[in-house]
Image (cartoon, rainbow, N blue to C red; front, side):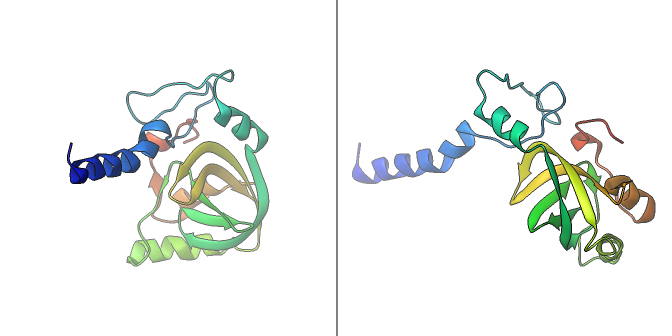
Length: 155
């Protein structure tokens, strides 16, 4: 094999390696991934991830920043609201959803983390001041349920 061929092969292995061995995706109550097919389950015996998820399945803190209607930061930790689909910031409806979410800045929020991670955000179902944040956003803005990602069937 030529030197350039080896380089291309090495580059492909490096680029695809992490995708082949790890993945994101929420877990339902049985420890199975939902929302995409085929899905699979993690057993407690062979999953290092399950131990990490058990150690921190809830996050409680102050809403320190609101990125948009479906992403907030709790004590600086970005949280993507599970099953919530809001219009993008920069659109009229997206800016309105962000405005609605910003009223909770400084409030105490508790999030049940699903185990999923998307981009730099953890994914969770959150309550603020005893109110289901996702449901509140669906009732008071143009945000909707994203059924594919409602892995705990909350909505």
